[in-house]
Image 1 (tube, rainbow, N blue to C red):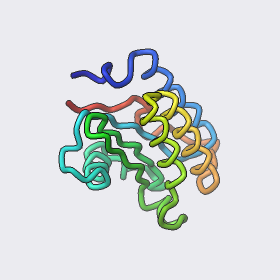
Image 2: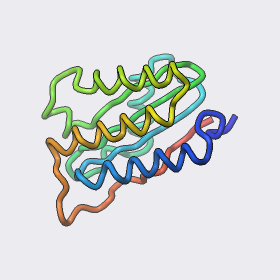
Image 3: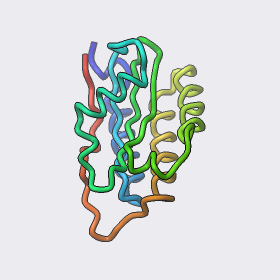
Length: 146
């Protein structure tokens, strides 16, 4: 089953565009990863695996954030790298997770991802504002595994 079964082509484009817009105000990096099932059962643990596989730890300021969704398993996680985690307390992404959960339950995954990506970008901008010499260190494309 392809990514299209969760996000059609237009929805994928909307999410990628939302990532680009969110990153215009921060030196932080946002990625979205989607897969049908959570391969290890624990969405946080799987998000850490994906984060490392995507080499998101290679940003200069260690300020990458991953939104991970296993849509058939109905599980997701939002995790940040050590740069952002050092500046915020535990539960920093709770509001974003609550909002995404509501959208996913309503079957509005693209709307939810776009809103959460926007919120994550704004939160990153509080601690990692855009720098004039900023380069996009990570792909804005949605990553997907079968």
